[in-house]
Image (tube, rainbow, N blue to C red):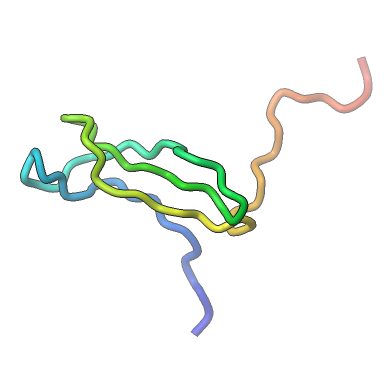
Length: 72
């Protein structure tokens, strides 16, 4: 079966300090030659609750915003 979903972003992850699933923030930690390493932190206590490596080329680059080409 073909990959039908692509990439997911976590909204809730289990936090050891809070002892339950909590909302998380995803932040870019490192840019690696084979992809990007993201860290997930608990929004309540700011402890690290997980990480994810996104392979290079898995997501197309976002189009540039506010950049005009040509004209005045």
